[in-house]
Amino acid sequence: MTDHPQPDWQQAFITTNLLVLGYNAWCGFLTGARGAVVCSLNSPQLGMTGESFPAHYISRARLAPFLNAWLAIPDTVILTHHHITSHILDVVDGYNPETDIILLLESGDLASFFYLRNLPISPPQSYEVVCKGWDEFKPIEPDYPKTQLFQNNLKS
Image 1: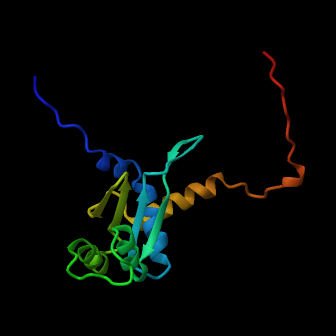
Image 2: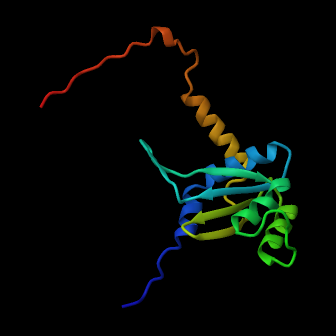
Image 3: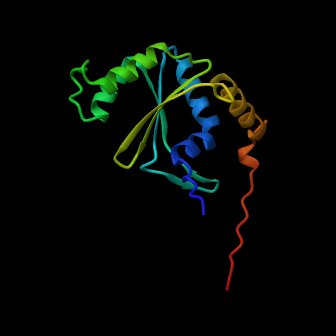
């Protein structure tokens, strides 16, 4: 019997959520700043469509204090000898927001850094797809006063 490696859950998460990650990355960049998408898997929200996870965009200007706090380093000073923080900031300074995503993923007590390149869909394309999807499902002229609610009581 041949051993098959177990699938990488992080890769599966990124693949499944690439559209939303790209959308968040591009929305953040449109505010005028490079930065990183931060996603925490520690507090999933269960809804009608399944699980969702909070994702936030942290601009480069706020990324150093965020990383210092997140990685349990005093947030008053960025330690240049701290290679992880320094490396992440260098990557954020040089990535291409039109084609790449910088992702910080938190799961339990593990924090992972991903520099996502050569993506099958770019952040601007992800943004377009998500926005078009919202337009398709948004009521054209909502008329809330005319909305009627019906209640059926179910008896056993």
